[in-house]
Amino acid sequence: MDKRTEESIKSHIITGFPGLADDENFKLTSPVDSNYNCIAWAYNYKDRWMWPHDKSTSDLDGVCYWPDGILKEPDVQAFKEAFQLKGYEVCDNPDFEPKYQKIALYVVPGTTECTHASRQLRNGFWTSKLGQAFDIQHGTPYTIEGTGYGEVHCIMRRLF
Image (cartoon, rainbow, N blue to C red; front, top):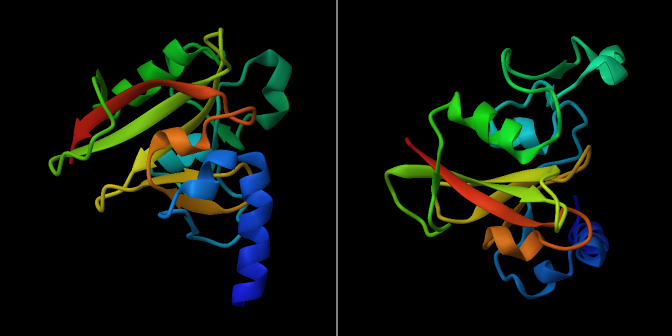
């Protein structure tokens, strides 16, 4: 992708996530890929969508993965339990700790409806998958808060 196209895409992303405008660590890190979503990306999958599905979304069965035994509702508690299966536990802050991998779960303000997950990279920056579009790097989990994904509800971590 040429620099002009990349800058145009970044400008478009900043329109939806204004906090990225001042994030010097913001960059595109992948081409568009509709094979996975943000939850799968935070869960370290790139070959499937990951979302709780119930009878109302049964047509996604087989395309949309959700761990067995975890509530199939978009409540943030279900997402916490799904990540606990991978060894994550709620922690106090998003600061980089070399021995830990961290994720952030986002909710619609004033609710417990989970909307997004981001993951901390080994370099201390954060990564997000934007729907069916790009993966991006951002400096903190807070720079993508806003009307699109809501606000950070909690940070979780696990040993690498």
